[in-house]
Image 1 (cartoon, one colour):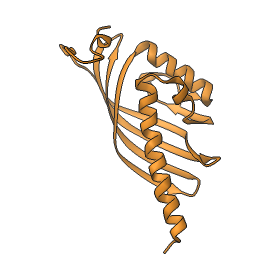
Image 2 (cartoon, one colour):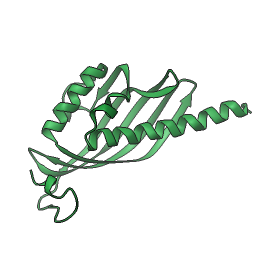
Image 3 (cartoon, rainbow, N blue to C red):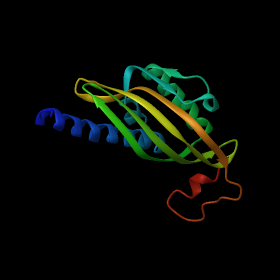
Image 4 (cartoon, rainbow, N blue to C red):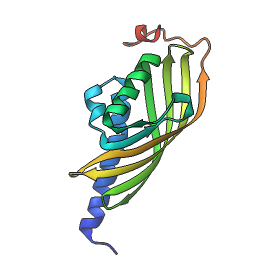
Length: 158
């Protein structure tokens, strides 16, 4: 049996990591550059797989990759689900499912499905992405899809 403090730290860490996963979605979807920048360790690696080009290294490289993505796919709606998180002191891992609706400049409305595999580090008491790898399992353009109403419907007409 572990101490109450250790168990509480693991619970708090899991909550913080789930919030980090959610902030990633908000950072890309809004887009919120300031928020996105805060989520990464200085030496982080961000690898979205062969569909999205070479991995990005370090915060500046990751932000440059984000700008490339926003230029090609200016509208994103991420839904991440089923995170399986393992905490080990100041490091952790997770696998999380992704379902994402995007509006691609090339393919138009597209459904993206895959799995993120993550390594995290707690740095100065804050959980950050250390290494994020995406396995894109489906890229499925949605012929005939069109938003007809809603506060961002106009934004989907690229």
